[in-house]
Amino acid sequence: MNTLTVDLGDRSYPITIERGGLRRAGTLLNLRRRVLLVTDSGVPPVYSETVAAACDNVFRTVIPQGEATKSLASAQGLWELMLDNGFSRGDCVVAVGGGMCGDLAGFAAACYMRGIAFYNIPTTLLSQVDSSIGGKTAVDLNGVKNIIGTFYQPHAVLIDPDVLETLPCRLRAEGMIEAVKMALVFDAELFDRLTEAQDPYADLDDVLSRVLALKQTVVEQDERDTGRRNLLNFGHTLGHGVESASRGALYHGECVGLGMLPMCSPSVRERLLRFLERLGAPVIWRGDTAAVWQAVLHDKKLSESGINAVFVDEPGRGYLRRIQPEELRSRLEGAWKS
Ligand SMILES: NC(=O)c1ccc[n+]([C@@H]2O[C@H](COP(=O)([O-])OP(=O)(O)OC[C@H]3O[C@@H](n4cnc5c(N)ncnc54)[C@H](O)[C@@H]3O)[C@@H](O)[C@H]2O)c1
Image 1 (tube, helix red, strand yellow):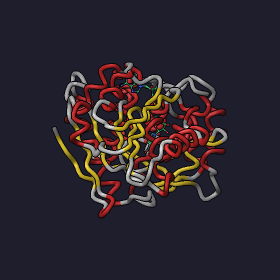
Image 2 (cartoon, rainbow, N blue to C red):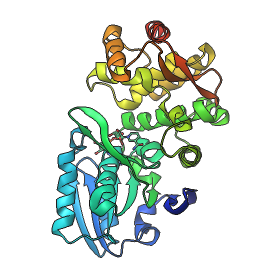
Image 3 (tube, protein in one colour):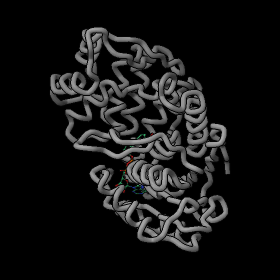
């Protein structure tokens, strides 16, 4: 077991990383009150059932899997459930699922009675290494992702790596891309370890702890994402463009992987490319580059003065630099050549 603490004064909270930790949810979290347990239809039910067994007064709801559920209508459904069942400020919401579930349940908890306790139990690798900590909660509106949301820190995060056994390979790889992103930006030694390992998943608990410690530090330094936390957007400038142009064919993490490649020095790019290939992730965008560029223009509202983007010339030393539209376009056009 390993416990980290995100130190944010009176909003501080523990992150527990423990195999089999789900079975100890009743000890690690305060579940002796009304509990709204939110999971989705793609998460094996045994995970939320295990947590429910530790509660005295639980309302377990299974929402449809998929990003389309991350909506105001779903949040309203959760608020109504709480209201109809007499939830008060002393009660809590628990998410057992990936980033979709966590973002939605966290948002619902943040707004109900101006904020009730929220526990996050992430079950995908992406949510374990990234989305479950940091307090960004949101829903999508009219196709725009995460446009309605709050900063609302969870009261505790419980990470049980055993739940990843049921995760399909492609989703595991997606989480590993987020992990390598953190290593590239902040931790050269971790990047070496991941790229040189026979099996990047072999030491997963340790990788999780290290990546979470990196994110913890960034969140402590810049909770509201006005400075250093922007570095976590590495790969997102072009990645969002690819995501939009791929129309759902590629996962978010895969798009971030593709989006990181053009923003690296040649030597780093080569190592990242080999790593992505080993994960089975795409390293070439086979679609229309013009469509990606149009989506980047639309998404980033590129002005004449350019935008801030993240670059990595040397592992562990990500930095922000203002980039002009022409340079971004030429990086895009030179990218993903085999
Ligand atoms: N809040 C943040 O800081 C932040 C950061 C990054 C991403 N996000 C958000 O996270 C979401 C993506 O998260 P995600 O990749 O976890 O996707 P997700 O929550 O949609 O989960 C992906 C799929 O995996 C299934 N699943 C979950 N756990 C499983 C398990 N243990 N075994 C088998 N299947 C399982 C789910 O049912 C779902 O079908 C997006 O909505 C994105 O906007 C938020």
